Length: 154
Image 1 (tube, rainbow, N blue to C red):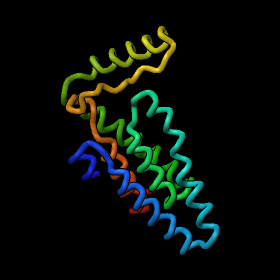
Image 2 (cartoon, rainbow, N blue to C red; image 1 turned 30 degrees about the vertical axis):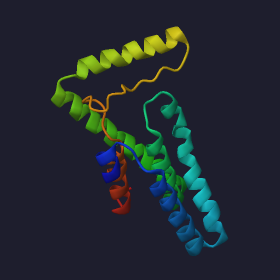
Image 3 (cartoon, rainbow, N blue to C red; image 1 turned 45 degrees about the vertical axis):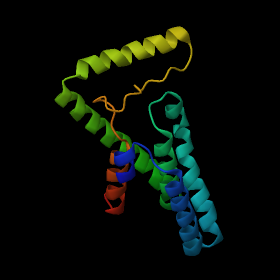
Image 4 (cartoon, rainbow, N blue to C red; image 1 turned 90 degrees about the vertical axis):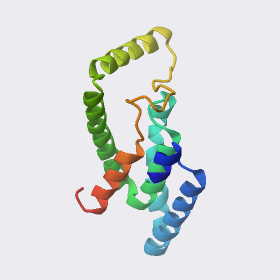
């Protein structure tokens, strides 16, 4: 999360290191079954590639979910993804309320859906300017979700 906040990206080296450590830990803890546990959990987040295709989620966020999924397992990562999206929606609503752009963003979303249907092709949803108030680092809700998971809330 700190890396994402500082540089607006998540370094692939860090993701690979995290995935390797997770795989080793799962294998040491569960034996050969740990490899399957890790593989299953880390592959579940790949369903989020659909959101990446629409420009709604970054590749780094998906890779981060993959690294977490290997350690959390399939049930844990599915809950983590769900809680992250709920927290992200809550943060988004707060941002929209404080920036007073809620109506503008709803209209933008409706326009986006209409344009996508009319043109029958995937159009990136996200504005490229990361400084726009509605664009925030999704690693924040991911981090909060992991904290809740580690704390036993879900």
